[in-house]
Image (tube, rainbow, N blue to C red; front, side, top):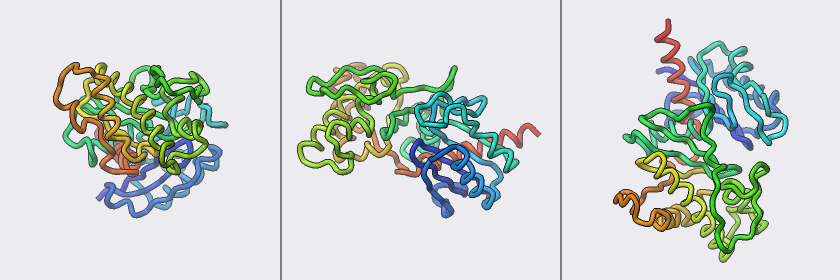
Length: 291
């Protein structure tokens, strides 16, 4: 069985693994995403030991999918970083690259909560907010990749938090990301309880339901998967489903939107690494077909 290298590179942590499916990723390491040279050095060191036939990289953005470079990012020192070059120079195998959310979507499509679906969206709510959409089984790419976390949303009437996004202030990411949750109460999401937790869930559901309403009207997905650390707030997924029904106001009137349209990832925290395996397998297949 072919062994692929998988890299999930987030703004906070980077994970590397080797295998052919989520079930056999026995070799795995996770470390902080620090400076580019240090982080990529650890990636290369791990992958060299695994000798994969191909490598998949699912990385935070903004990401230039043609040149393989990070775009202008608030993460200090990473703007313009070449992700693919250092890995290819060290390990001469096919490399597949996409965003972390597109990677997670591919993983959920192959092994998780989107198996058998042609069109769906994976949304992550953590340090930032991002979304990866698969249409006819393929990630959406255009001039760049979608930046779903930066859409505008109307404010909850009881929310006076100014927003944390460095670019737009009170966009979706500015109001509903993990740092925004902490910014309101001074407590990280996993530490919330009582009225603070109830308010956080109410605000999160209010904002995320607006995003998902837009996705329903623009892409007509068969399902929306919401992952990321903030998605684990107790009761959030149920509340998002309820808020979405209010947002849609009976239009387009599909029964699928009325019950369990928004779900948690089937792979849990493994969605991104699983997607990197898919990226690696696709890169390998392309390389073989071109010979």
